[in-house]
Image (cartoon, rainbow, N blue to C red; front, side):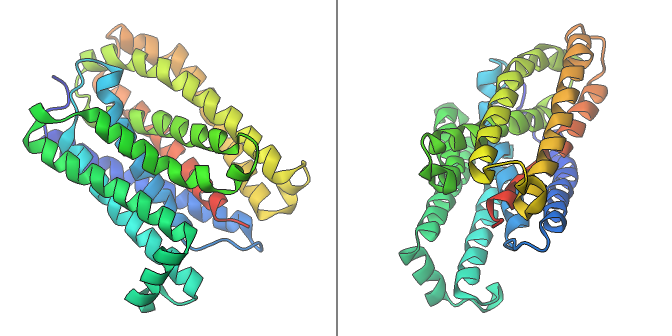
Length: 313
């Protein structure tokens, strides 16, 4: 079954992380420049990386549902979920420090405990942290005993953890806001996470020929869901067109929309060129991998912008 080899996958994970991490940070940095002089919280880069890690967990866990030949990649899931857990802890500490108004290095255990005990955002952060940690721990156990593991549990915990912030954010105060927030996050996770997972586990031309058309059929509704929910979110938040250029939030949103439009065009082009050629076994695995990584990097930049939007006034 595909996805069992560990050595090559570990190397691929390191290589792709070296590209995705700077891309997400670039998106957060671009957002910081666009937001000025409006305020933006400093944890945006951490949130961008945490969102990318959570989406990757979703993608890796969804692989067996994408194709029956794709085995759960428990080792990669353990590593990525562990990274996600660490990032969520760091994010929680930064949020606590911001509330207490001290540097994170000067945050005392008592202040941190008070934040997570008495703040709704702190309690949500703890719930997300627990969800990520459960996924990491379960994946580690499953790596040793895969015959007794159920990938559906990983999907469930990861999806709930990933949805907790959007369904409790500002959109949740609007009619169906929580629904659109959850749809936006999960659709983006599928679009980004599954493609990144394919880049991590697929090794041959034949594997890309079998799996890529199935991913393409998943990606189309995911892109539609991201676009529709994003437009609704923007209309509710901005209330008009002028804030698109007059506010930091609007400028970041405009940059995100431009990149999203470019990705939609790229996806249309891939469906006409890459997908049918790969499906006919007429494209090498290396060429398919380059295309997948290219799209993943651009989406990671969008994740950085999106993370900044969630902490921009």
